[in-house]
Amino acid sequence: MISLAPFEFDDKILAQGAEISCKLDQLRMEKFPPNAQKTLRLFGMAEVAHYLGVSPNNLKRLHLEGKGPVPQIASGGRRFYTAEQMIELRHYLDKNGRSDAKNYVPGRKPGEKLQVIAVVNFKGGSGKTTTATHLAQHLALTGHRVLAVDLDPQASLSALHGFQPELDKNSSLYDSIRYDNPRPPAEVIRPTNFPLLDIIPANLELQEYEYETPLAMQTSQDGKRFFTRSGKSLETVDDRFDVVVIDCPPQLGYLTLTALSAATSVLITVHPQMLDLMSMSQFLLMLGNIAKTIKKAGADFHLDWLRYLITRYEPMDVPQAQMLGFMQSMLAEDILQHQMLKSTAISDAGLTKQSLYEVERANFNRDTYDRAIESLDAVNFEIQGLVHHAWGRS
Image 1 (cartoon, rainbow, N blue to C red):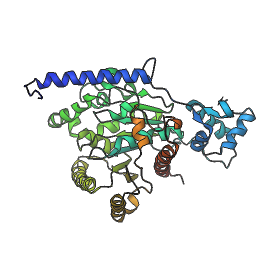
Image 2: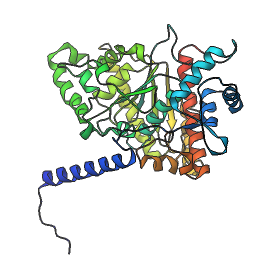
Image 3: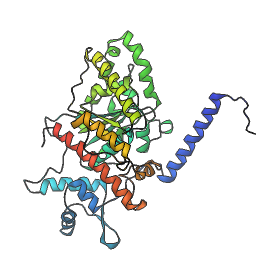
Image 4: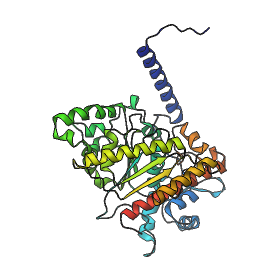
């Protein structure tokens, strides 16, 4: 018979939390030796051509003519490039391409403002962190300077980029938006394994902002204008990035509101099920009412775009397809044309704290991998188009 003897709750969960943390660190050391730091795989010529927007034959010709970076040659003559070499290729093509060629270095030009994309949802499990991770990495692979900001104290976005908050002791955005002795954001930004992607990791200290803000609102002007703190923080690193992607916590608190006030665009993830739609309805009503209140206090909610992204979508699931049609009838052009499909490839990659852009295609069923990566790319290229449109480009 199972013993039901009383136990000390705090001691038990502390011991279990420490054991889980230790095991996760062991897995990290095994997966990313020798120092548990993530590296990035090589990219095949077809992938590189895809993200550069050229044909594989064009890249092959450059190599044969001795132009651009030299790829690694594998068995069968297959060519592979590092992520750093992809950047070199961009600059080479931008400098040496035809005058009417596309812009291979697509970052901000003079006069174009920093794009800040807040990825939000009131309900957990909507694919918010998966979306933010792959969007940030995709924008980096396509030549944009990106800052990912993890605002969720649970730090899932950070974990997917190789950080374990309770062990790595990294600072979070809290250190830059706190009310006493804030640090410059440049001091809390960390590099990732993607050359054009930096991150501000999360940790449990972020939750302190939720506790401190109500007190600060009663005692200081800074507290009354809490919603400006993330935006002002990001302004100090404006010249370093083209796009900021913020993964907001799954709650409508002060952290989410300060992110939304800093945002130039908002992406709302939603799973096409009735309960999720009901939850989103409540989220929108609450957010709208709160936004009106803090707008009177000076918050700026002028956005370049707002879009809903359908996540974990199964096209063959009839109720989901019906729910998608129902949402499209109401939200029309505000729903992204492409959906993020539910895929075992994405969840399997997550088992090793990796995104789909990091894992090798050979480790998966090829049809499953191709279907998932095509879905992600379709969504992310559509969002990239919205970013470029906000900059005034066709």
